[in-house]
Length: 91
Length: 91
Image (cartoon, rainbow over all chains, first blue to last red; front, side):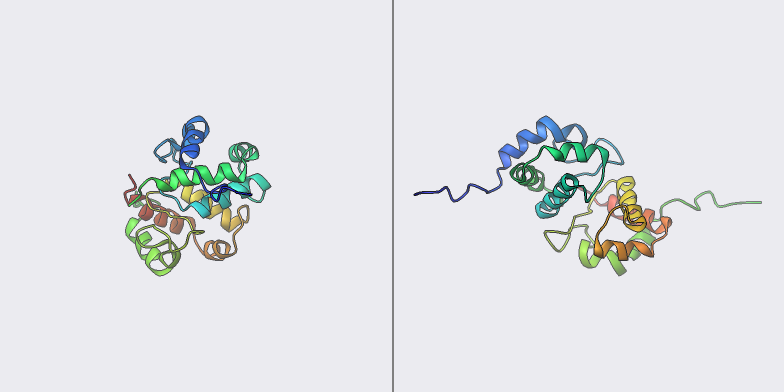
């Protein structure tokens, strides 16, 4: 039986589509946020990023907006979005 | 009586010194972290940044390392560090 070896690899393009439809309204397509109290994600470390989304989903980190947003994200979704934002240069 | 009008303004140079002595070991002088699970702060929004440090200090956001680090920071310290990291370009 053959299994795709990249089944759980982060998919940057899928992440980009999710950012377009959801995250970009606050965090921007370019990862620069629209508000001084909303974080930039441009170039952010992907493991840190996924850890925070998991924390919003499990309630260990609290934020009214992000709790709602993270509730419907799978771990694969989180990794995809992280792959997209982390791919943007911040130097 | 004369009062300095900038008494509570963020002091970027004081923030830079604090980053040198404390934050840079994990988050870098350039705001790029040393670990995939530690966030970058380069160009981060200062109000968001201060809000997170306050949350670590008051316990509403939990992290073993940051709880310790934030415990001894004044609000002025937080604003100074935020002024330093936010001044670094991330575009």
